Image 1 (cartoon, rainbow over the protein chains, first blue to last red):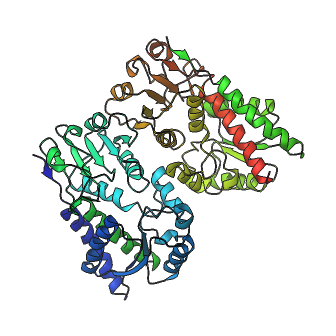
Image 2 (cartoon, each protein chain N blue to C red):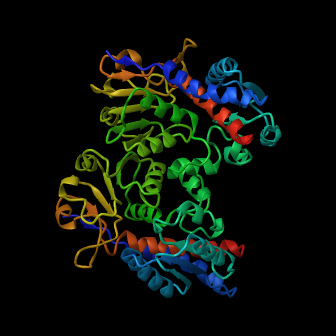
Image 3 (tube, rainbow over the protein chains, first blue to last red):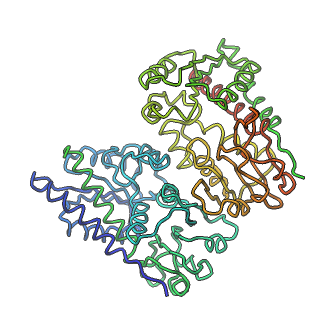
Length: 284
Length: 284
């Protein structure tokens, strides 16, 4: 039976680091603040936001919410970003993606101030991930995956990592980070001819397709580490990942659960970015 | 025996497109010009440059050469880039990489004007390749590979592509372009545990390691397309690729030669970028 790699203790160690900086800032009267821009009422966004708000409260971070209707104009989204840019009390900005189809993501995101880009959406930050240079912050979810692997002592060097999903939010940047850890990386997606066969080759399998239960027992081989990045809501309205845990658990070596896995680490990573951003903006 | 996919006819079709633009520009008295910045006397740089100069002459492009000694200071490299930036008669700038170790590549390349960045070295252009958006020009060698596959009717969709080499000049951007063509892509490198095994899984195998003869017969399976991106100089001072052609040819379906393969297409792609850059800079 697979070992369950919970996010809780990974998040706890990240939060410990953040707390030290938060205390140092508090002595100067500074409270780090995250600006959250959410458009519409996507269930997985709301679920993630709920966890984030709880975490911010526990860590005593301020939150400023910018809620926009799903039919909002591009112009108003840009104005909202600029408002958050100019607000000195907002140190990091999170924008839920994907944006609605009528909003041009590249046009809108270009307005974000690089120093407040805590989730790696600006071009310079993305180029940093691609080239492997340190420019801005890493994207939170891919960093959370790497932190989790590190925490549980999974050495990527020379291992075969297979990433299912090629989004610019998770799949592509995660592939680059795994490559940076010297894994041999395969990127799979909806057009992959034989997904179970590719997945079975993995020492480390990353499910980031955004499809409930897509990874089943026939994707898995003995000794495999399975990382579930999916945050989906199933027919019963319950939160679930991309991995069909029941069929995967008997074969895999270890698996991250949903909820309680990568999502909670992501929140801790995001908080740590906001804290760093605040610290850098005050030059401390 | 493998079919030989020569670069000649791919280059010819790209050059045909370029010629139309060159003629249009000539009627306005404009001759596209490439600025070439080369540091030191690297043999594969010189070999590539030779082909490029010949091509520019045949296409009636102007060339401005900026030759710097291998112990040049970072400051002087930056000054050279700025000089080429400011020269209105230079429309595209090629800088041979990798730069010598004492030069910080990121610092230096940040000075290049994006509109003259014909080989995708600036952060915005790189982010464009990573995200799959059209920003600036694609890197020449990866684009040459895609053009060659397209020309010979190789459909990447659902195929397994294995890229050996993870440089930011070839391996990483090529992986992104292949992903954009819906291939399942594996990125291999010096730390890959079993390189022949990974390579053998490929429908399309890309050798971009920069090591003469690293790809041998045991990397290849029947029906495989082998693309050789290597430009190396062997012990006898002869130009050769990453593929040991003698042992690979019996098994592979098709193979690109060195010389006369991807290198010649790369030159044609670069010329097409310079021509486009000139055309855009004059708003025509």
